[in-house]
Amino acid sequence: MKAAILEDRLKIVVREVSDLRPGPDDVLIEARFTGICGSDIHAFKGLHPFRKPPVILGHELSGTVLEMGKEVKGFHAGDRVTVLPLIPCGRCIHCERGKENICLNKKVPGVAGWLGTFAQYFLSKPSLTFRLSEKTGLDIAVLAEPLAVGIHSVYKQGRVKAGDKVLILGAGTIGLLTALAAKEAGAGEIAITDLFDLNLTVGRELWGAIPYTAREGLEDVILKDHPEKFDVAFLCSGAPATVKQAINLTRRGGRIVVTGMFLEPVPLELTAINLNELEMIGSVVYNHDDFKKAVGWIDSGSFNLKRLITHIFPIEKAEYAMNLLIEHREDAIKILLDLKK
Image 1: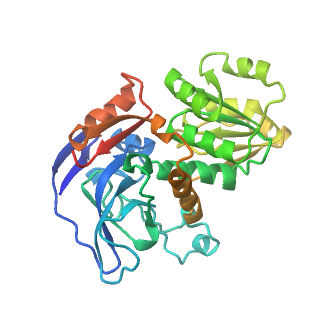
Image 2: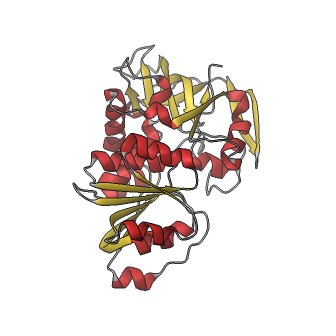
Image 3: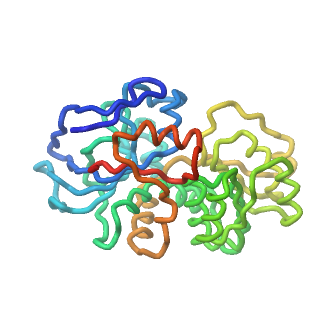
């Protein structure tokens, strides 16, 4: 099969690798689309904590079932599917508490022999494989994974409730889908910040988010419009400057959710957290019910998620696509690789 392999920092090579064969409890999927995630960019730049070259990156996928192992029940060849890309151990204390997303021994694509999704085929488990409605486009289905991130962040960690005022710092794919989740959770007002006009425009058009361009004096501008500050703030970009912004723009007794991956140490104003009794909590990926909810939302057809997909490239242009996102030579939000081209 053809795969895009990160061979070294900033170097992706597309070549043939050994075909996959399903084990007794495996589902073999013929991949159609895969999405490029921020964590893939981190790995491409040599900054990811555990995805290291040589490695097949990617963990967002849609496609069709090609073959099943002899122990697999309930699936048929041709089923249109997406995949929850996380295998928990089921034995550690976190799994026992229903927090498989922080399992001590979880397995994810690109690590421990589980090949990533930048390839023509992918092996999944039945419990991780979700059938799609016939009406759901396979391009849109790729967004189930980042949408599940936003759902987990908003419902489980942010605990957003009806009427809450929400601030989202960073309007990339995760930030925009966090805005959708916040709106569905009943947020009364959503403000969103970013460097790029297209991202802010999409957030405003789709979810009614109030856009703010990230620039010098951003906090003063937002405070002028929202002197009462926000109930919940979501850090979705990983930009160090957003941490101070979140602390200063969250009301007393409010909550800050760290969803983005911060790759360098960030100083914290602990006195402000202390005196304002702010809660700061992490959020990492999702649990099975979060992913199921994401697939349900996508299958409902109620949301114009296609607006987030700005580019689709063949697998041979994987390196080009990575660099486009890094350099931002043109407007881009979500970039997919079409694995059949």
